[in-house]
Length: 69
Image 1 (cartoon, rainbow, N blue to C red):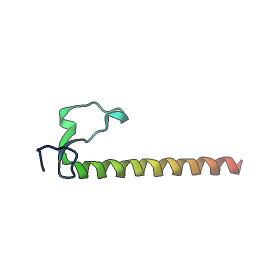
Image 2 (cartoon, rainbow, N blue to C red):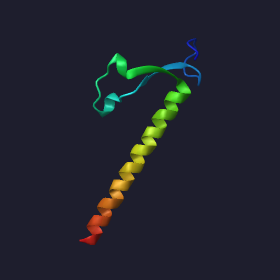
Image 3 (spheres, helix red, strand yellow):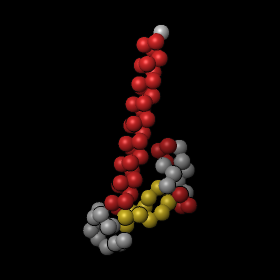
């Protein structure tokens, strides 16, 4: 892990939030850890893909339920 500038490189140190504050979590130090920038970005992208997939799944179920009426 690299703490030197310039920041933003894949090996740069970042703070990863384990419990996302945008989902209602309280920002506490115990919910943070160091992570490589590339690892933190990959984890966030994976989470976003999962959220989008779940939203599509819900939409399909709602459309299916409406079509059955």
